[in-house]
Amino acid sequence: MEDLLGSINGPSDLKKLSVGQLEKLAGEIRGLLVHTVSQTGGHLAPNLGVVELTLALHRVFDSPRDKIIWDVGHQAYVHKMLTGRCKKFGSLRQFKGLSGFPRRDESQHDAFGTGHSSTSISAALGIALARDLSGENYKVLAVIGDGSLTGGQAYEAMNHAGHTGTNLTVILNDNEMSIAKNVGAMSEYLAKVRSDPTYSKVKHDVEYLLKRIPAIGDSVAKTVERVKDSLKYLIVPGVLFEELGFTYIGPIDGHNIISLTEVLQKSKNIQGPVLVHVITRKGKGYGPAETNADKFHGVGPFCIESGEVLKPSNQPATYTAIFGKTLADIAADNPSVVAITASMPEGTGLKSFAARFPSRFFDVGIAEAHAVTLAAGMATKGLRPVVAVYSTFLQRAYDQVLHDVCLQNLPVVFAIDRAGIIGEDGATHQGIFDHSFLRHIPNLTIMAPKDENELRHMLYTAVQLDGPVAIRYPRGCGCGVSTEEPLHRLEVGKGEELLPATSITLLACGTMVAPCLEASRLLAAQGIKAGVVNARFLKPLDGQLLRRLAREVGVIVTVEDNILAGGFGSAVLEFINSNNLHWVKLLRLGIPDEFVEHGTRAELFAQYGLDATGIAEASQHYLQKFGAR
Image (cartoon, rainbow, N blue to C red; front, side, top):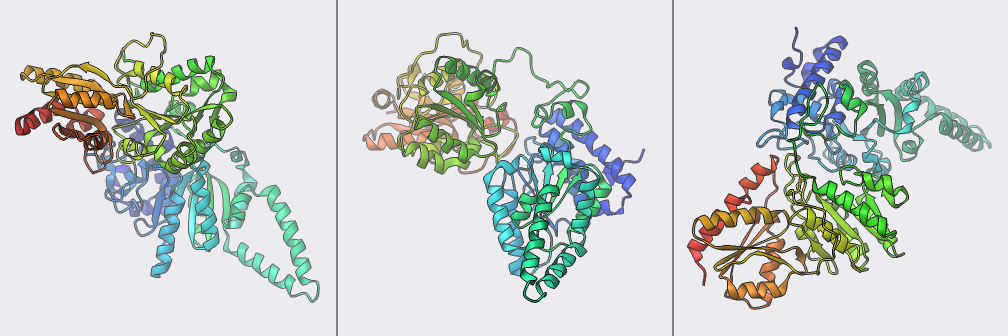
C-alpha cells in the first residue's frame, strides 16, 4: 500500500497530489495522530478536526514564505507532520523531543511561538504590518478556534486590523458555534460569490454610478446601502466580522478539501482583512474522540480500541479533584461562596460544583482578566468568589489581581492549579512564576499545601479571611493521605516543623515538602541530621519560626518549584537581611533563570536537582563547602 505520508518532506510535496491522494493522506495522518497521542498524550481531538484544513492551507499557501500562525497551538500537530517533522513525531511532548506547541526555534515553518489563547490575530497583524513597512509581498494567516474568540485580545486585534486595512487572513476554525447550522448550499453560494473578485468591483461600481445621479444620487445610494445592510443582517452570518472591517467568507465545510482549496485560493485575491469561517468537527475520524471531544481535547496515554485513558491502579485522588469536592462541600454551608472559571470547568475541578450550584457557577470563557475583575465586583457585594485558574493562565490577569482585587483588599480566593513544574506541555504552561509575580503584591496571603488534605484546610481558611488569598497546588495526584478529618482553620503565617534539625534545615513549600522529607532520610544515611519545615505560607512568612531556626541551625535550605528570582527563597533571604540574622547560611534551590522545557515531571525535577536525590546532594555539598557555624 502506498505510504503517502512518508513521502511528504515539506508543504511543496502536497501540491503534486491529486484530491484523491490528499483524502487518503488525511486518513494516514489521522492514523498517526491516534497512534502517537495514545502513547505520548496530547491534544488529540483538536488536531483530528483540522486535518483537511491544514492540508488545504499548505496546498494553497507557500510556507515558510507565507506565514501561518496557529492560535494556542493545540491544533498544530498536523502542521508539524507536513513541515518536515513527521519522522520525529513519535517524540512529541517527550523529553528533548518535539514540542506540543509551535516554536520558532523548532522549525522555520513555525512563524510564531504560541501556547496561550487568543493571541494569533495580534501576532499575525504585527507580522503583516512589518511586511508592509519592508515592502515585501507574502501572505499572513492566523488560524483561530471559536473558543479562542471568547478572549478579548482577539477582538482588540480584529478591531485594529479592520482599521489598518492591511492584507491579512483569519481562518476561524469553528467546531461548536451555533452558526454551524448555516452550512449548506446557500452559504456555500454566498462564500463563492463573496470570494469572487468581481463582487467587490461590482459593488464599488454600482455605488459610484448611483452617487453620480444629479441631486438625488447620494440619497439613492444611502437607501440602497440600507437595503443591502438589512438583507445582509438577514442572510450573512458574518456581519459582526464585516462591521469590524473584514470581508467574511463562509461558513465552509472544513472537511471538504476541494471546497477549502477553492475558497482559500480565491481569498488570496481579496484586498484587506479577510475572515474565512470553517466548520470542523473535533475528534473527526476517531469515534471516542468524536463522541467525547472534551475528554480528548487534552488527554493522557489511552487504549486505542476502547478510548479509555491508561492510569495506574489505586492512584490517589488528584489535587484538582480534592479542590473541587472541598469547595462544593464548603459552598453547601456557605451560600456566599461562588466559583468562577475561564473556560476550564473540568480542568479546574469545578464540574461537580457547577452541577450542585448552577446559579453560583460562572464560566466566563477564555477571559482570565475579566474573571478576576468579575470576582472583585462580586466581592464588593458580600460574595466570596473563588477563581479557579491554572498558574500559567493567571499570568494573563496580573493587572486585575493587583489593581482590582488586592488594591481594594477584596476577599477573592485564587485557586491556582498546575502550579510549579507541570510536565509535557512545556515552557508555555509551566507554572513556575506565580511565587514571583504574586508575593510582592500588598494585602495578598499566599499558601501552598504539602498534600491534598492540607489543601482542604487551606481552602476552608481562605474563604473566611477578609482579604485576597492565593492557594497554589500542583498538577496530578496527591500524596495519598486521608482526607476524612473535619475541616479546620489554619493560623495565618504559621509554618509546621516536621523534623527537627541540628546543623541544617530544609525549608520547603507546597509540593516540595515530600521530596525534602525523602532527602532528609538520604542525608541521615550519610550521618547528617536534616530538619524539614513545611512553610505552608509563602506570605506572610513565619517570622518567629525563622528567627528560631537562625538561632538553632547553621544552614537553611529553601526549596521551591518556582524560579529563584523573586521567589520563596528570595523572600526568606530578604527576611534574614531585614532582621540582621547575618550568621545563618542560606542555600536556595529552585528553577534558574530560564524557561523549563517539556518532559515528564520526574525528568524535569531531576534535571533541576529538585528531586530527593538532588536536594540531598546539593545540601551535603553546601555543608562540605561552607559548613555550619
